[in-house]
Image 1 (cartoon, rainbow, N blue to C red):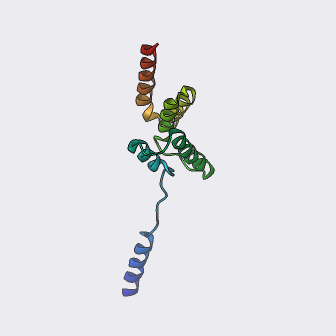
Image 2: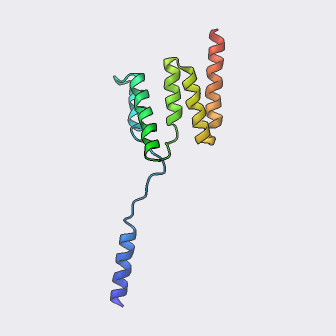
Image 3: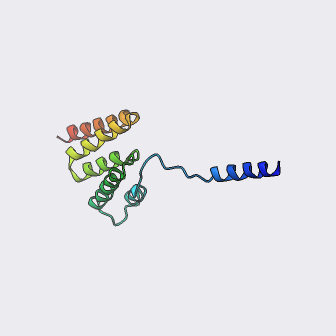
Amino acid sequence: MKKIMFAAVIITAVSGCKTIEPQYYYGQYNNAVYSYFKAEDVTVEQQISVLQAVIDTAAAKNKAIAPGIHAHLGMLYFETGNNTLGVEHFEQEKRLFPESAHYINFLLNSGKEVQDASS
């Protein structure tokens, strides 16, 4: 009986040690966001490179990209004046995460309103 109890405890302990893979790949995304909000000595182009590398690495590893990465990258492209790539990444964010569509549409419409007002 003691052997059965000991085996059950060992099996439970060993099965509890299994690590779970993260659902999404973040790479250096957290560092890029931190740099952006802290306004560190990192240019927008460098931040774009970091986020593009995260996307490329996720694709190479066949991992799902984390929510927000395409939206953040789109925002950075808008900051550089590359509205075409900004819209592309916003649209990609909506395709990957349909729950973000309402907010992304709000951002796109707000950008159009600002553009129209300055014209």
